[in-house]
Length: 169
View 1 (spheres, rainbow, N blue to C red):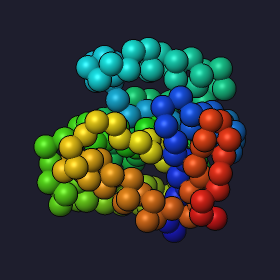
View 2 (cartoon, rainbow, N blue to C red):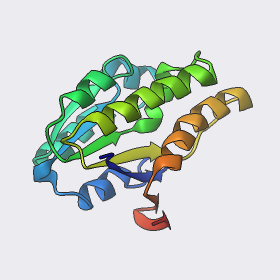
View 3 (tube, rainbow, N blue to C red):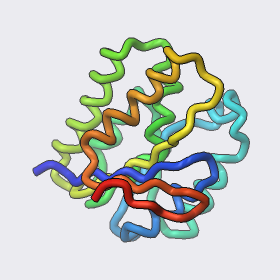
View 4 (tube, helix red, strand yellow):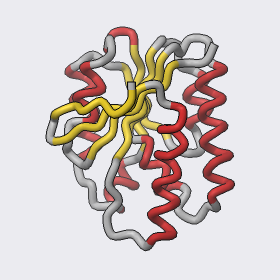
């Protein structure tokens, strides 16, 4: 049986992660954080990972950092019924030079790993909704990651200044 897919999206600092944590049982959930300290430093998002790790510990939410290379293996190891993937859109940074076909193939590998893991009943994808200062061809590649997961989502919630607005239920 495939897991239920939920999407929570918004801008930087909008409260996506906080809202996502409020709609799950953190004691029965696992969070895969996409990115690395080097990657966040390179894109000038200083202290992002430290802040998220502190929030996860405060909520007693088990978590692990992952990347495009390890995500499928990491999903296969999840034993909790709820999986959070934060921030799904960050995968764009790993696939900057990939074709649309390569992105679709990788996203489908991730979806298959989720659906084939009998432990996972629900997955919450945390996504970034705005793309700043990118040429159209790169914007389209970044938007493709969101389009693929939005298509599968049972619910989609947009976070505006900390306020959740349900787009699809």
